[in-house]
Image (cartoon, rainbow, N blue to C red; front, side, top):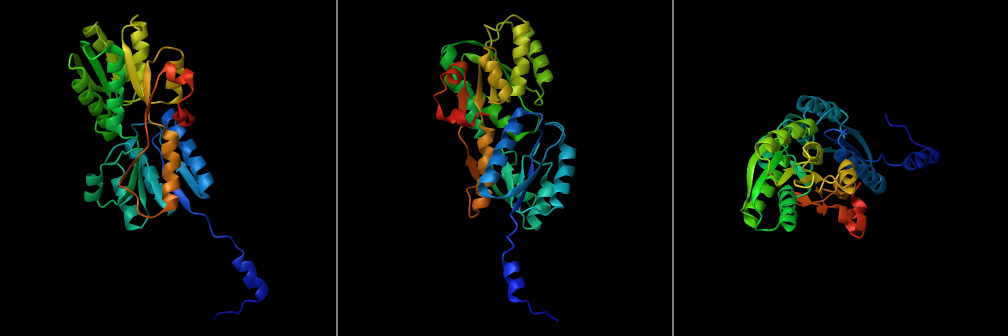
Length: 315
């Protein structure tokens, strides 16, 4: 039996504010400055959009099984959206399939999910947002050729990301394909997975530099690995010979570039990715399958010049 509400009680009930939307945000690891910058973007985007969020991450870029466990735990809270950066293109699919069945929109941060694989697994991706990783790799090749010339010859090393990770594969492929087009005399003598690991990248660099003492340049699929390569290059006394290019534009890379050690980084602007992801979920409606934020090549000259408006988003 329903009770009648007094006018006072009814007014009080209507005055209770509607509960803010809450988003679950699953990163890879906050020990990497790239994801730390993205978290800052999520925070600012949520504040401006008037939404709540809870964010979790795992220990490392390689902790695939733990990431699935965290995803399942987050889903128990029934968020209004799941915004995820998967460690590889398959690990989170069982969790994200459940989200789809629960009617919870799934957003792919940084383009880590393969849309066809996801669809076949029963996952409905609302949209992917991040940089165009193929274009970012190509941008690295274009900058390298602008420095050494289209007629340059010599060996090149490519250090890929985690084996099976679509992001690293796209960056490496974009670099390799553009380099072959622009400077066919520059030969990629090795393209090896560095597993996003700085120490492993340093060891790979040591092996390839020993076998190819005339190495011209190294392209690493993220800044952590690029910084590992820089350590080896300088330890070998070849800092002036080997050009090292990373991808991400994270805070550690910026420091190294300013100090004159790392030559360049293709900045992915993760802050902007995180911010826009939240804003677009809040906006609702139909979104394109892929949303790309711009990239830029960070060099010492660009950073010291300080005039590029996109530097505002380098965190």
